Length: 218
Image 1 (cartoon, helix red, strand yellow):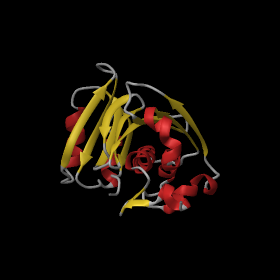
Image 2 (image 1 turned 90 degrees about the vertical axis):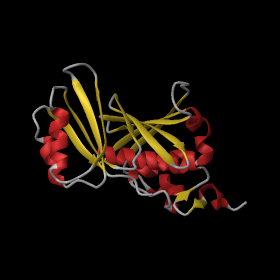
Image 3 (image 1 turned 120 degrees about the horizontal axis):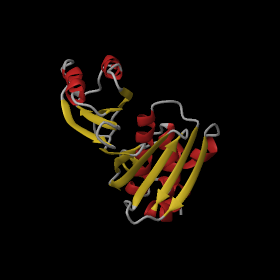
C-alpha cells in the first residue's frame, strides 16, 4: 500500500482519509486560531468519543495541530506536522462523554482561552463554547465576538456601529451568565468589517473583550 494513503486528497480542497476526523479537525484548529487571534505558545487538546478512539488512524491530532498553526485543509505538509514544528508546547488528552458530539474537542490556548467545537460531517464544523459561553459559530461568516457587562442598550449600540458602515448583519446571538453579569455577543456579517468598527465597539463602556473572526476558506 502506498504510504501516502493516510493523507491522500479526497476532494479538491481537503486532505483525507476522513472529512470528519481529518479535514474537520483542521478546520476546528483554524477556527480556534482565528478566535484567539494572538500568538500561540501553548495549546492543549482534549479529544472526546470517536475523535479520541479513532483519531490516531485518521490523523485527527495532526489535523488539529496543523489548523492551530494556520495550515489549510489541502496542505500535504500536515502528514509530517509534528516533525516540522518545534516551537509550540502542545499536549493531547482523551475522554469519553456521551453528552458531547462523537467528534468533539476542547482547545485551550495559552492557558487563557478554552474553545469547544464539533466536527459535524463533510468537513463542516461548529464552535459551541468559548470560555464557558455558549455559541454556535460555523466559520461560514466573518464574525464579531465581544464580551461585556450585561446592561440595556448594548445590542442596539453595537448593531448601530456595524450598520453605520453599511455592513449587513446576517445573524446576532447573545448569552449571559446572569442578569447584570458578564454577557457575550457574536454577530455574523456578510463582509469583513474594517478595523475601525472593532475598535469602536471595543471603546464602548463595559466591553471587556472584542475580536473579529475571519470566516474559513472553502
